Picture 1 (cartoon, rainbow, N blue to C red):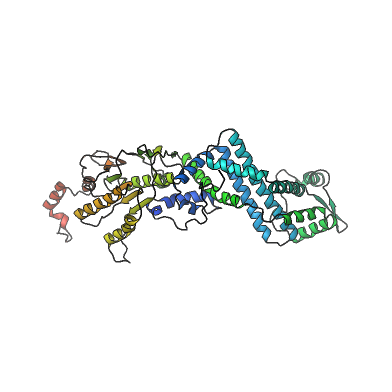
Picture 2 (cartoon, rainbow, N blue to C red):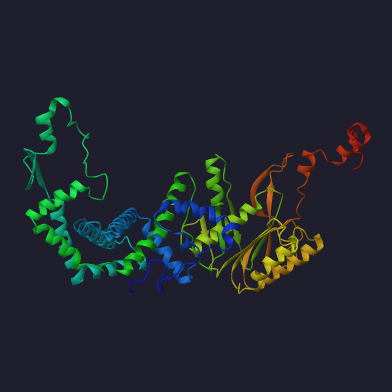
Length: 522
């Protein structure tokens, strides 16, 4: 297989989307991506997370990611990125030709680190292949490309030339002596080290104390006026090395391969996510490589809301996980339960699970088998906009319409609290039609609703409930489980909390004192 991209087996993304999908806000993936981006601040990785790969691309990425998680390969790709960043920086600096001599040295340094990046990654991948550590077709094809590049005559010559000239630059030394108000420059260095010279002549002042010396030339990349004059004086007397550097820099201009520049960018997709994942794992959160077998039930155990987990960790709060299974013929979960009982959190956690599976990455669960879906669609309740003047129900229908009109066949759909302002009967009718539409399009999904009767007569719909702990206090467990029996009311705990039960109201009405202040109506 020829190497094209580390993100797709058969195509290159010439232009990434410049806007996040709508479901990012609904599922809080924007919060997760912000944390991932912090792990790779030198690159704009966000657009790579805006676009789903196709089925083959999903498998391609998942196999690559499992290989990259191996320490040797992960570290080698990080080193490749580091060397490429340094090379790019020196190449950009070279453009500002303040001084031809320094500019040529910068270009030489850029070429040197570019070759280091290529050869270093090639050697590690070669060793990993020999030890059967690489199983993904993506990294195998990348190694094949790097191996062919290493054997290319022009690249091999550039690599040999730059190492030779770089060794000369690194070993370059001259001695500056002040004699009778004159500066005398000679090739080579004096015997011994600068530290020993200071110790011999100024030992009583401890100026040569270990780790106390710093080069006066490391403060800036730009040459000072004195440095320029000293170097030009040296190279006027000894011009051979400067001529070699200038000739080398002029001989190599368009030396960087487009595939490697693209690789430097694309590999950040994996590196940044794995650095983020390792941080989360140190905090106690679990990740797994999901199975993607459509012939087996879609299910997961220990799935949790990753965005909420990152927030709760900082606040020292517990993270609740849930299990679920879509059995044969089941397409939608209709989730009921008390307010603040974990229904929306459950829906978000499942949505994140589907999203990261489609991206080819590890997911927020102990174990999971997730089917392939063509798309991820969400519709979450939002505050009514006063600007449109449409009313909340009309706004919900306006946002729902393009989702239902789109080619949504075999998508995963998450709906949260739709038709909250409609009459109960109307909400059930409209909700049932929405379910029938998506189940008819062979979609799976989660529908969170306060309408307890919704889904009763819909094929492929399973009722789930956010549970209470069964005590008199009716504390929320934030667990969502199957509940085929008639659901109990969940208002009792609120009624008791605010003393609004029949007995409480009856007792109040017998005592007129509570009506003082003119509030006599009830």
